[in-house]
Length: 247
Image (cartoon, rainbow, N blue to C red; front, side, top):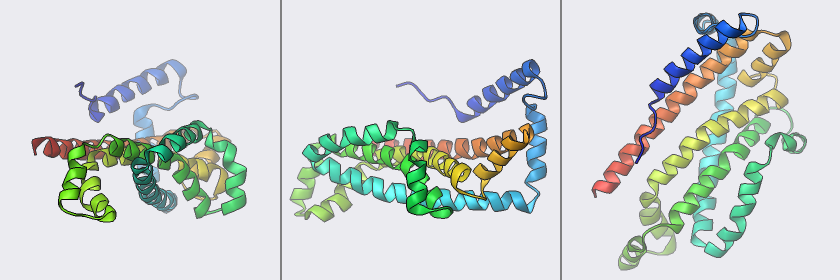
């Protein structure tokens, strides 16, 4: 099995590529990494920046929690009902491939401007990966787990709660890891179209002003968060898989 490239290596390579691109394009097109880091440090000392972070973080947390709850429940239901799952999965894949921006008018019509629209955008992006990975894990679950539930005389609900879900924890973590980045992306898109606050809104304003430093500083902040979260969940997933294999 090939090992994943460590996030630290990805970060270093990205910074080197960034510096090379700055040298080729010039300061008017893209600011240097050190300049962007210094500017990010400055704006992180302002109240406005953290108000935007708080706004984005609140919407992201709600979107992720809803995606986890709905995605796991729907994935379990589709995994247990194979016929229904085979019908619904292509629909979910098609929806996932659809550019979510095309649904922007419908989302605004249903949810209006504000937090709920941003959460909806986040859920639209983060729901499907958890659903599909959960369904796939259940359909590939070894028969021994079902026999164990029968031996223990567990009803269907208890079998899912005590046997099935613990057995697919690594796949659930993998789904959450993917959903973290996608839910954040959805929330940021929602802020660009349906909000007057948040990091997405701040990025759009910076684009309108041609403020390259602000755009890159926000991108850097979000990248550090996404890489850190992904690395933590990767480590958690690897630890869970190791303990599961050792049993």
